[in-house]
Length: 280
Image 1 (cartoon, rainbow, N blue to C red):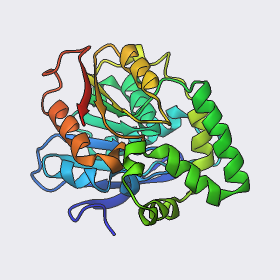
Image 2 (image 1 turned 90 degrees about the horizontal axis):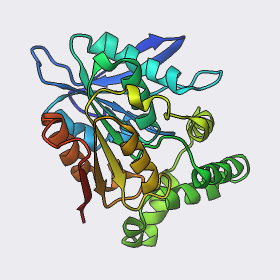
Image 3 (image 1 turned 180 degrees about the vertical axis):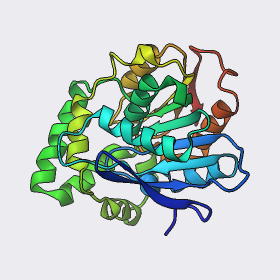
């Protein structure tokens, strides 16, 4: 099933990998382009199924499915995939890049490497480098991945969603969330990258106006981490959504509103601005 009825599907070849894309570009479509970069273990469809059509009503939307090579996975390698898709599908003008979770780090690396390609940068549930709490969760994930993936599904469901979201659902709904959890090829390498990736030397090179969005109840990327990311960007704003880490699933309409307002006029909100607890 396509992510959107108007999405063209194909693949761009880069570094021996075939990188799938979903692109709403139509003849004579001169709207701004929004590029979506998903997070760990996800895809355009699993992480942006609801957000994609909301954005497509106002923008050309280009999303891709990051691929994991056989060797070491790096932020630079992943951002090169994004760059290759942009170069082939949207070479004419800078694009608005939205990255979620690991995708936020990939998007930031792209913006640092290719400032001319990025007109605005939205980083959802991103971080600079993993702290002790994140590395501990990562080690628990690895042990369960290797020993008990049924229990891992429950653990990931518990950590991905905010406690208000989970508390408002019955056992059948929770079981459906657990059962829907999958571990696609390459996820172990992405988790290893989550533990070692480090943007601290890259942030100063990002010139694009940026928006950092945090989930108020995020257990995977606590607020102190998104605040460090916000503080390290030269031209950034900060907003909080009442959500866990799974912001695109829990609060897609609110996420869309923030992205739309920012992309429409990135300079409208002054750099350094904070919109705490924007949605309740």
